[in-house]
Image (cartoon, rainbow, N blue to C red; front, top):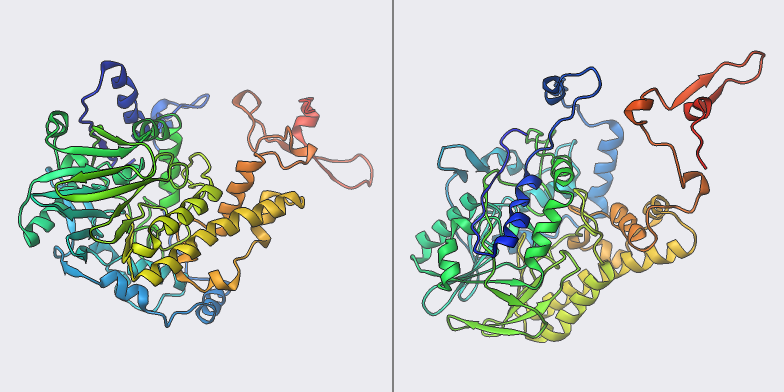
Length: 502
């Protein structure tokens, strides 16, 4: 893949762990091409590029987009105010390069989004979200809490301690995290990094750690590196066991190779896109294991809630009582999230997700004045936060419960996706819409979680594949011409060839 991401690990672990961690390299590398019969490896490795000019929107698309303008509350500008609140500064054009001058992050390529009105080729709700994700730079969230946004797909949160700073989720690459911290130092003065915290085991939340601290500082204990229990196992297993396929599917999910523009890539929902830089990992030297566990670091008190199994296999939220602030990691972003990411992963537990949000409301709702997340923008005001979190809770609970109801009524996954709709009370909130997950594929994921791939139809239990293995490389379907005036029969070639399916 062009501009493939580089991987570098900073580790201090037992030798028995080295092979497991080093294997993550294989997950990031493109799959090795395999030559088919009669084809050279070079030919297999060289795809045939056929340029296709982007098309204008069809009449049906134009009408659907126009209808959406009357169905959703486009006059509501609160998200734009929240996304811009506390802005301090940013870098001009925001193009981040590596030490060799190669571009790692380029926000300028999205300048076409300055246009307020969505073009006919883009869903106006998606266009609105894409414009919100253009807000970038250093933001003051509340006293002593800052965020760097728009330097990567995720946010880096910066807490000011008594003598230094605590970093939460140091972005996805070393180059973007260093640039974000440099901006903070430029505006707030340079301070030592006292601690780094990974909220969860997804690479966009830890891959940039090598840009802000060194492995030596972590190994010596000079810098605390905190993570939820199971973090390292989850980070490795999710990126290694099916890593080659996941990497390939990620390119399709995010449109990585598409040109940016109103007829190409516009946004990835949670942010503008993914940087192409150096991915690093420094192993945690402190682990959070149970809800209610606390730490005080550099004069900053914090309490943790374990939410593993929701948005990630290993995940935690962090409450800061001094600041009445809750960092909800990635379980309460202002959109409908994936229950099963299309790049591939284990199906997430929507029921547990809803329960974790409810637990957060009970534990922290009446004492939280600001809710921040590690993608997109925060929310302010105790009553507003509780309502927001309750609607997010109800969103995942509704999708889970209604999918189960329809499963028990005999619907298959695709059938559920066709009929499931949000109630108006949820549908009219911007933060329940599918810029990342959708009702369609989230409901199918719930079907998969509870029932599995088999839809109950015996004809599909051992169905013919779309393409037969190389030794049976002829087309699966064949036309059998009758000898009389009987109708033409289209038969599975497997039947003609005697490939028995039972």
